[in-house]
Image (cartoon, rainbow, N blue to C red; front, side, top):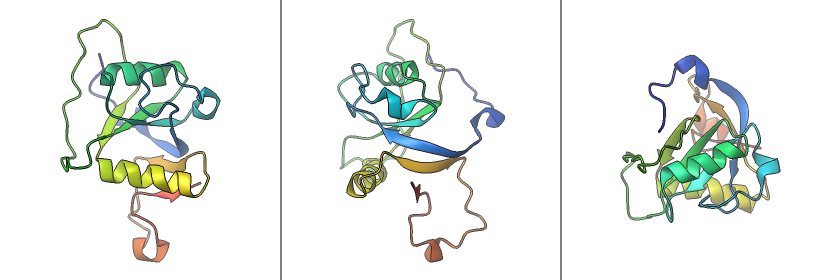
Length: 142
């Protein structure tokens, strides 16, 4: 079960790594655990419950997880992450993003041979001209 509500003060992180998990769906033990400690895990939806994905990420020491949709035709940015009726306890924040956003991040990481992307939580670009940055408004890459 995920604890709610998360306190805003607990979710402020600057210059944290967003690192894709291996395997990307995180339904089994995560292989690249040395890259993930203290980072935010990027995980793909499918094959197992959100709780299983979050628990596997939590076990390698991430501070949070972002689960990207695996359905490129689904344009909804909101989804119910249902409890899987087990007694396992997720202690990290987990959020969901669309297929398009998640795979844009994943492909950019792969194309540039990066381990991950550098992010701030929460993202605040209120003093940045995103057109001059020449990057997506939510992205700052390693």
